[in-house]
Length: 254
Ligand code: ATP
Image 1 (tube, helix red, strand yellow):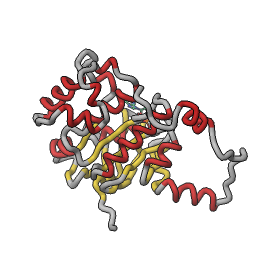
Image 2 (cartoon, protein in one colour):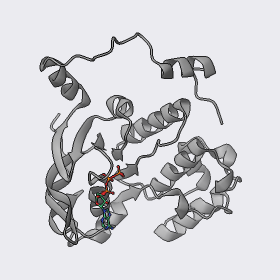
Image 3 (cartoon, protein in one colour):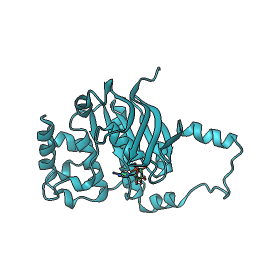
């Protein structure tokens, strides 16, 4: 199957005053994939995402999202994307139904709150306040808010940071479901195990440059072919396996 780019970034540059945060990067995200932006703190991932999301101005470069040019068609891009907000963006004293209705009002569309909460397995929390949710539930709720406008692409900036191993796996299932229903997912994470199992392709960003784009499998195979060996003998299980085994394999409601 020929992969169709849904996001095209060409020679993107972002300067903050004299500081060059993004130094002329180019990459494509294909329709229907989970695409990971990986790299150390300060590499320029959030800056790049926020420019694509039309939330930040670029210094130069060309970007198209679902066929629309960021410079001339930002309004059309906004309608086609879902962006995960930082937690501080929610009114802590509204319940989940009220919050979904609030978002629907902002988008000017009608969606059933229960239907949206069903997508992220939170129907039993429909009358709970946002501040009463666990960390994993908060993340799932914020993903539900990105889906309200039936987006073609969702952007998730470190969605699993701070979650326990089960909640993290539960979120991976949710993100895969979103992809399987035809929505393209762009995600950042600092967890390489997560990127390895979740992302169809990843880009490594370092010091404002893209230093590689490929599938996780290809990256790993190329490293092994180059003669790389792990220093420590690899055991058949790790401490995370112990954690999951001891606390129950299935994800539990927190
Ligand atoms: P992290 O993994 O820590 O989230 P990141 O890869 O997302 O990092 P960015 O947040 O894009 O990195 O930041 C890239 C660089 O640009 C950093 O050195 C940061 O300090 C700088 N930067 C980001 N926003 C601004 C701003 N508004 N003004 C000045 N410098 C900024």
